[in-house]
Length: 245
Image (cartoon, rainbow, N blue to C red; front, side, top):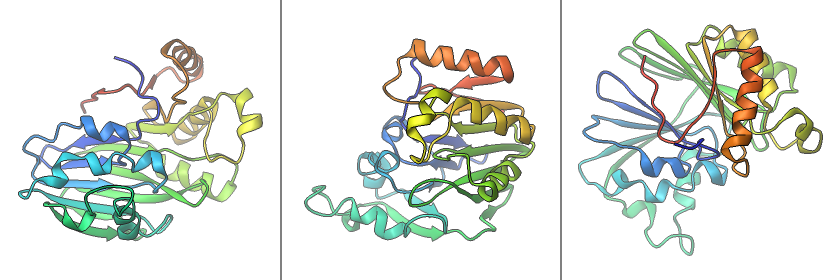
């Protein structure tokens, strides 16, 4: 099983049977929905690599499904961004003709709360805006923080605060420190940045995410091993990988 590279999709299946999905990169095509009671799809932002596989997400074409879409105030308008990518001449099926039922919610700072699940957005430092999410469910805390570049003190402090004490931190690690010299301003971090945030937030486990898709598995192994020397409980995101709490 290879590293996930830049597939930009994370799924969380709750004991209730509800499914939370974060972003709709190419990885969403492999999400096994099964009999999920509700599908809640949260977007960090709407750059192409985070939405490009949404038109191929099978539940959108199933009349028995209800898909709830969420975004934050830190990026572009939700409904317009999703429907726009499926207008002619980009796709043959208009979003408004999909057979599933849809709801759109642009979250405020308080986020989404239902039963024992809370999903709170927080701002990330990325061109045109983006957000991360702190997910609290059934006593576990997962933080999803892709597409963030360290360097804005106020936003960085908010990221560390949102990640504080998390069981799992999924964090942007697209670059190596030497690469950052020529890639600054693109809105991504290094594995070293990810380690620093994990340490400051005192998280239990770090997963390096949004890995450069041009890097082969051996190169990613070297990055993961370097990160483990500073933060032992580190892994690289892999396609189809499952973590159980």
